[in-house]
Length: 379
Image 1 (cartoon, rainbow, N blue to C red):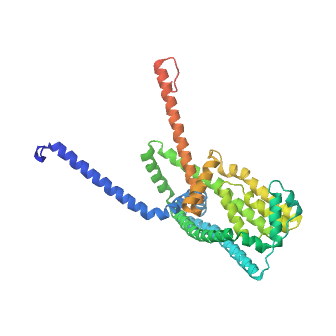
Image 2: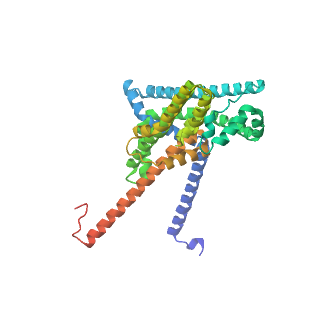
């Protein structure tokens, strides 16, 4: 059939299809370019949104206390957030630098020494004998032990230097995220309305309900997981400072990471307590051990208080979110991953529950249609 023989309606349809295909292609290309531009900052933007949602309630109270000045309240929130971020980071960094300098000086002056192990270490179950032998060898001839583990120590040193570099980048991203949160807080109503419209377009009538559900999940996980992890790390750091533990900043950071990943903090505090027993008096060591146990068990009390009711995200979901986020985006992904995966889990379970309710209603209606004597909810 020639071009002249094609019906006019078909020509119009072909032109519309071609125009639609071109428009969709250009739109897809534009979205792809925009995504590539914001991709390096995507986790930071998400973290800024999470911070804004988590701090919305105290921000509103502060704004009301300042006489209805939202911008001033946002500036104060950003200032406090930066202080809470920078001061501990500077303290941890100073502790790490001081520890590294002390170790370097001790190695150069051959003054470093390992105290002999207590005799009770040999009686520890499973690992006592091997640990006692290795510890005793290190106390008598540290250089031989260092020579034996030289390759592993070099790899650990390279990893530590690389991790410090990533921590610096992570700190910069955290600062940007706090600033983003400060920009979003005065525009919370508009941002909420936009999120509700987008969710309504995607999910239908339950858009507003799902936005509220997401915000509730973000607040509960941020307070119950990240808040508890921060409290535990601060308490652990104070205890180690009081006990005179070297490299307190490094151990505090490790406690924070373990707490976010939902791992027992005693994985760090246990060996530190063993060190305190070997170098300090029995009274100080026992008090530190009790303090470490209290910190390790505190999450059982703090999480229900801070997370509140209605948050039943499994610990496995939080663990996978933290580990996956850390592997994907580094230190900032450790925090973002746990929150984002918990929100996804909450939405998924909500959709499953909705589907089950719809299926149950459909079965009840079919049963009522087959037997008019069966009562229904409408009746």
